[in-house]
Each structure stands twice: as C-alpha cells, then as structure tokens.
Length: 287
Image 1 (cartoon, rainbow, N blue to C red):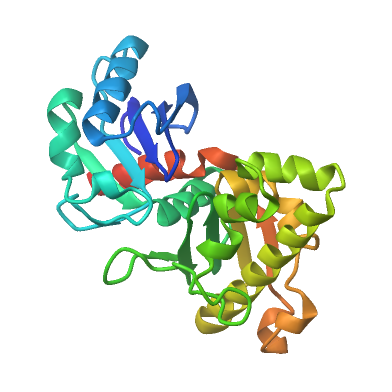
Image 2: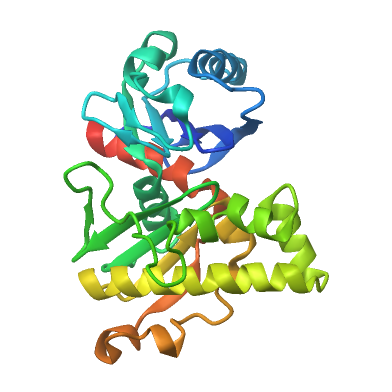
C-alpha cells in the first residue's frame, strides 16, 4: 500500500454502522459499532464517527474507505438504497471529506466484503463469489484474478431465487426475514432459537438455505467460479445453519462439471470484511 500509515474505515449497513482505524497491514483498532437508532441519518452518523476517529488520535489519515449497502455513482452519491432510504441522494465524498481531511472512496458493501477477504482472508481465490448476508443480501465477484465492478458497481448481486423466494431473496434469507419467520426480533435471536431446538426456527433456516443454494447455483453457473465466501453479520453467525455442508446441495447442481467443484466457506475476516475491503479499495484508488 505504499508508505506506512493509517486509514479510516466505515461500513454502513442496513441496521448498523461499523467504524475502525486500519493500518496498512490490515490491523484494526478502535472498532466501534453503532445501531441505526444512534445514526438514523447521515449527518448524525458523520458527527458520531468523526468524533470517535478524532478521539482515536489519527493525526494524518491516508484516506477514508466507505462500504455501503447501496448503489453509489462514480462521484460517491447514493442513488438507490432500499435499506437506507435516508441516505439516498447524499454525496458521501462531500459529506465526509472536509471533516476527515483526506481522500474519500466509496464501494458497494458486497464488493468490499470480497476485497477484504481477498486481502486478509483467502488471498488465493482466483474465481470466486462473495455473498454478504445481513439486513440485506449483496455480493462480489472475482474472475480470473480480477475483481468485477460492473456497469453500476453491483457485480455479484445475487438474483432472486425464482422457486424458493418469489418475492426476492432478501425477503426469505436475510437476517430480518428469517427473524420475522421465527417470530423474534433479530437474526441473532433466530440463530439462538434454532440452536435451542425450536422447530419453527429450523423451518425458517431450511427455507433460507434453499433460497441461498438456488441463488448461488445461478451465479456460479453464469460466471463459472469455484469458491463461495459467505460474509455479513448474519451469514457469518449462522453459517453452519445456512450451509451445513461446504458444497452446493446435489439438487442445485445444475451443471455437474461446474457445481461439483464449488466449495462454500465462511469468511475468515468475519464481520470486518467490508471494513477491510473499504480500506483496500481506497488504497488501490490512491496508488
């Protein structure tokens, strides 16, 4: 990444915001998580996270990397954010650049999760798909060693699973969707209910797992990747429930020559993958 220094990192998700200070070697300090009750709007978010970064004592940050669950244009303006409506129309570069006094770079959180895992988790992936499962569901793609961004920066966004999730995969397999099916307030509680033997929770996770397998089969068949990395808070925490085996279920192996070789892994960088990927993206843009 060039000369040594520290970067500011921000991950804006559908229900929480995570921030950190990240060094050139990927070590993260002063990691904080805010619920959207604390950062319900962009201006409040900026005030809270900037105050924390100032308290962390970063004299001259090399840059700010932002990962966000939204469609963002080349200027850093949020164009569409189904789970972050109050952020739509906000230019994130303009919002943060003055207070942070450093370059600001923004990337889709699904791509950020992939970048973080490629950097400090599984750097050997040449053809892979990262699916990030949290409040929403995003994705990222690396093909022949190159990370793909696409026309709108959303390359790797998993499509709706036609059979199992006719209303969209987020309506079936995201953390809030599974929680609603179980009748609890959070994905974390849904996981706890499943591990405690709640049959309703088992049914909800089985349905989510079916939808995810179907969506992954469609993506991997289209771009011919052999590695799937599961990221996102809900995906990491419920990995063994959503993916009991490290391979696609046989009934979703649409093309045996392709799908028999697909392996599914939990992100080694865990919930911090988007934070790390946001920094990695910023570093590449500044290099």
